[in-house]
Image: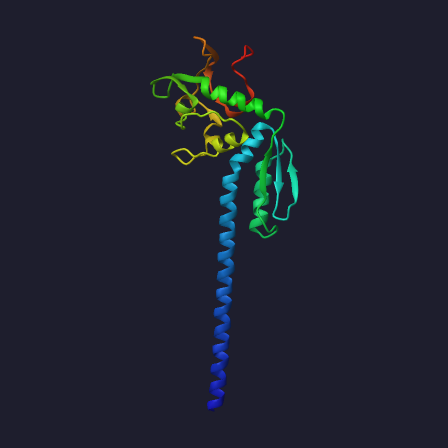
Length: 223
């Protein structure tokens, strides 16, 4: 009888140990999956300003993985969706490493950066806000409550600028997506300070986009 009880106890202990081990294994895999997803999404939100910038600049993106494989996302495609799908592939274990991304400069990159610098320094926005207050001419940085603008000398500087975060936690590239009066959605008078004692009127009543800041050279007589 005693032998039978001991055998039952041994079986019970063994089964209990197996159950506990299985629970710990499940918890470990659940924890690992959560950390993998957390790592992936953190990287996704860090890299997405670069992807948005590439889309605006009209550049291709070079992708590479830990195995040294390289491929290109062509300009004009839905880059954000593609990058999101790669991120999901990593989360679900379809690929073993996060994909790294690099903007490939093209013939327009330098001229677009030059336009951006000039427009950020010289464009002013003024008008009447939604409650009737007069907003006197402000630079884009002043209106959007960004740090005082410092010229971007190259693509690296531009990327670092667009990845900066304002006091409300927004990336600069998102804050500059559409620029209205005094950081709002209200339209206003937009001018370009020529530095020659007069200003050029871009629009008497409107807003301006980040795409325009890159692609339009408002210092010329064409605008």
